[in-house]
Length: 217
Image (cartoon, rainbow, N blue to C red; front, top):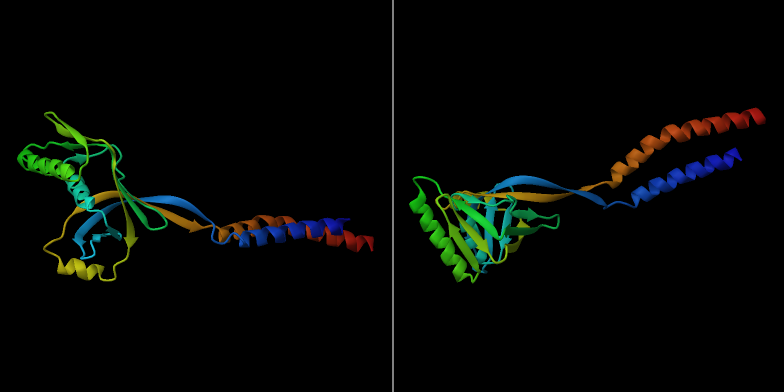
């Protein structure tokens, strides 16, 4: 009877380990938040727009990207949700400006800011994006009919450093609050954990059964 019980426990452990092995490829996900710094923007003859950042490179095919960059790089730009770029584990990139954003006024630079605001308004209209704007002594408040969303991809340009060096007189400094979804494999960790926790249980049971069989022979 005890022998059967031991074999049952031992078989259960083996099944558990085999089950964990079958979990290869399963992952848990988490977000890593970073401030990406875009250093270069250029468009290819194929109408692909590349952004070269400190952490990665990105590619888009939506002309509204230039408007997006104008808005977020405007002095005093602010949104309640600071995360405006999301990169998932499949290398898909999402950019989003909420339907309401603010450009705060700064003393000594308001004339320049007025030019930036006028340019944003003109580009919104050219892109046929419906909006309204309110102004007071402290800020301009933009209200878009819908959030501005763009989709692109994560890429790795082998000549990243060379492009930056050759375009040193065209470099920009656009900071984007981003979050990157990371995937971590868990199968190996589960196998190790199962072995670690069950070994102290199965070994004493085996010893007790061996001793009992020795006494009863």
